[in-house]
Image 1 (cartoon, rainbow, N blue to C red):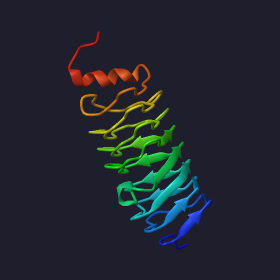
Image 2: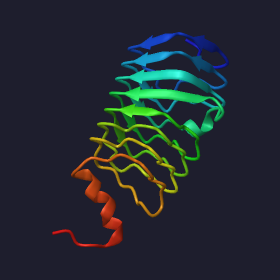
Image 3: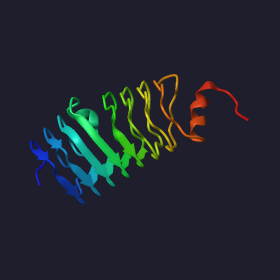
Image 4: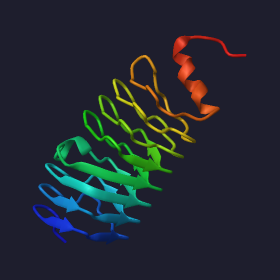
Length: 172
């Protein structure tokens, strides 16, 4: 199926391997992806309007290539690996119970977003706005509180102790 230069409204994509597919100049509105493999697809100027990803494997996605004015998505129970969310305004985005591995959130506005129950192993947060972000029950995050805005962010114990490592203090 050809996906570029199209509009998809209320479409459900299930059990599809979308490896190396081209979604350039596409509008995805009120769409759901379930149990899909999304690997290194091209999304230049793509609009994401209320798009949900459930149980997907998403690798090498460069969200910054999409249409930055139209980004509204939710990820749940998905593996997100090597994806680039840098320099975006993606407030209120939900990443629930996801494995977010080696992904980039540098200079991203994630205000009011949620990473509940998510593994953030080797993901980068630098000059990121994490105001009111929910990190409850998330783990393996590496967030320097002196380089990121974390006002009113929510964290759980014991992982919250990781925020202190940048202050070179000893906890006994």
